[in-house]
Length: 398
Image 1 (cartoon, rainbow, N blue to C red):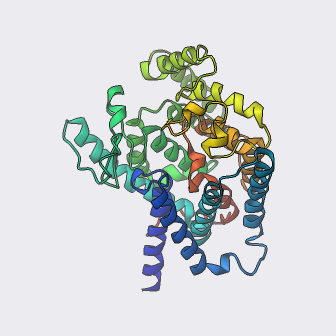
Image 2: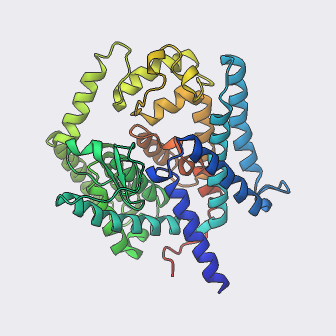
């Protein structure tokens, strides 16, 4: 009975972490949702007080991580003359929330993440099929949120229909769903062959839903991981074959990329458009990057903060607008500076003991498409590897 309660609690925890990392129904943008989230994290902290007190070797990394970001906020207050305390506190609470969930799940985190993605993917295929055949889904969101239709466990991005029906899963955008699926394979780098052997059907469903996202960034990252996996995990026994297969696969990917509208044409058009912006804002990944360079140069180390008053100080006409920023990498640097990104990267490299460079390239690649660093899961990623038990090799949950 105790095991069942713990299992149920773990399932609820992993669902909440994933849901609060991009489900429109759990949107953390409004004041009401921010207050509710703050109360919830405080309550969660009190129920897991041993994770914070007394200070010991298990929680010291968390305090160093948090204090590092607090230092950046202090520098921003001095440098900019203004700091949005709700934004800063919300940022720290997201990290705290992720830390509690990840530490509670401990070495089982990756397994629970695999299972929740499998369930999300399975449901998404039903939702995607329904919308593909022209049926309307009910909407549990406020009617003012016209860009989304959500039944909580599945989201339809209404604004995206003009580009064709794509699978968003339970997230705000198909690219976000693809990114969280790519993250699963990043968790298992060096163990992907075992992951596949032990979870064939689950991965079939997850990959089937992945390909229905039609995400440019997601496809490129997963193809990159596929080639790396072939070279790393099969080269010891089948060296010549693995090199040949990866070369053929790379050539095939290039051919598909150059001859597919939503891959080549999309990237080419965005690159061309970004070169003609003249410093104005664009919500494409390349246009956003070019725009953000102005603010990165303005305050390269500590950034310009999250509040629009300082974040867009030289573009006041953008303040109060729903911008839909398209590049999570440049946006985070413009907001938290190079130091903010370095803190996350350094902690990842310290605790990720396997293919550091590959993980880092894929991690930065994922950020090019979506605002993942606005959410608890990506902000607390270092703790996944900190609390991972390296001796645990079980991939299935009963």
